[in-house]
Image (cartoon, rainbow, N blue to C red; front, side, top):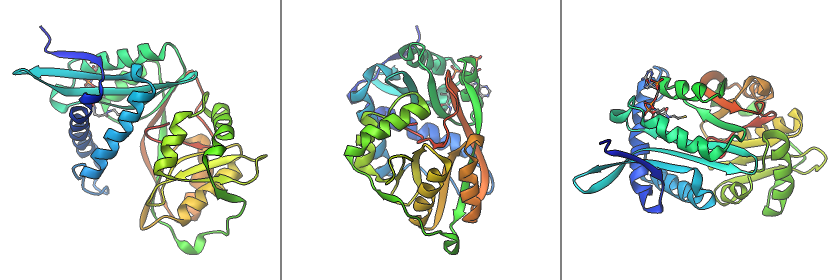
Length: 296
Ligand SMILES: CC(C)(COP(=O)(O)OP(=O)(O)OC[C@H]1O[C@@H](n2cnc3c(N)ncnc32)[C@H](O)[C@@H]1OP(=O)(O)O)[C@@H](O)C(=O)NCCC(=O)NCCS
């Protein structure tokens, strides 16, 4: 009998699933690391805690999309795989997905993905995909289009920073129009995800409600999610993030419909690289938009 059971995730699976995630992505990054990339480091304790907090949030918001593959050994169960997905209105997204290296290629990933996609129930879907050949194979076979992503890396040349106006700090009473903007760009609002992000990130918004836009900026000054109705607003928001960056920075998840971001990055003297795919099904690639890896 197969000793690996795919079943809905429960809160007490989180520490074991986190360990599986840390090992899986450490090995995957090591295998795909380019010589110019920094050495891959094991996940620090603070990042493990953030992973568990975020997944607990997903588990509470939409438990039906959260699946684990558990292996029983001498009476104890441990996670060997996980697929954390969520429905928000008419949109399904995949926050994270992995199978321990020693267990890959045996169909566990397919079982997890089938469970997560059954929860999607035919909704349009989106996620950020790695280049792992098992992952991209799985996604295309599930009907997703893979759109290559660029990333801009380097240290901002501060002499290039323009004076940016028309922006202000965002608050929770901005969420209503932000959700409307989300719906125009990516089928559904982020809903409860906005509250989670506002607790952990800085929110900057366009002051002009006729030209809406927002960006969440992390504590290193990296834009972790950006949405706007017009490319010029998106560019102002990205400049604001770049102005607050410290040391080497990264602008991630740039697809070709979002060349406005490439133009800002080049003006700031960042370098263009290529990294993974945005995978979409039943919807266009969002623009002007830079997706968040976990919240899409
Ligand atoms: C993506 C992942 C979850 C798939 O899990 P898995 O258990 O290996 O998946 P499966 O065995 O069900 O299927 C993977 C498919 O790709 C193939 N495959 C698996 N590993 C492969 C590899 N290294 N090279 C080429 N094909 C591969 C399998 O043969 C299978 O195809 P098939 O069903 O048509 O035969 C897993 O490989 C993984 O964790 N990768 C590293 C982390 C990662 O990239 N996660 C995705 C983030 S978006």
